[in-house]
Length: 173
Image (cartoon, rainbow, N blue to C red; front, side, top):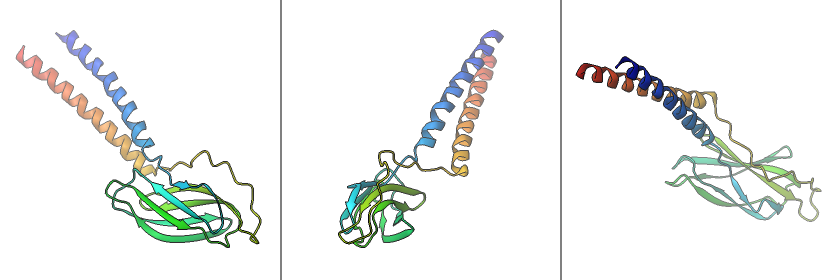
């Protein structure tokens, strides 16, 4: 009976480790949300649509456009009950050409890139950067520590349950 007890305990450890390896990376990758900017290249004076989905619901976000040493603030938006928002904003007509970044600032900062071509008579545009790779959200050390702590807690609870079941099985025998 002792060999079976040791075998079941050692069988539980890989299962707990597998759980830890599957839960922690998924939780850490959850924050890979960005602002979708449509269209991603415009002429100064045009409108763009900003969209976000899968973030904290019912939260206000401050919208700013940053680049070329300029910060343009837009009206604040609020995510709906599903954690989404869509807003259309007008790019200032005197904005110099170049690469800019929209930021939706709330419980975290979400970003999306925009290439702006100068309007006729405006400041010449720079060559736009490669916009195909969205910037990633950086989790704070506290968030990552909480995810790992939760996963370790789940492994600990699982180990306690296995030990308790083994003890009860031993008492019944």
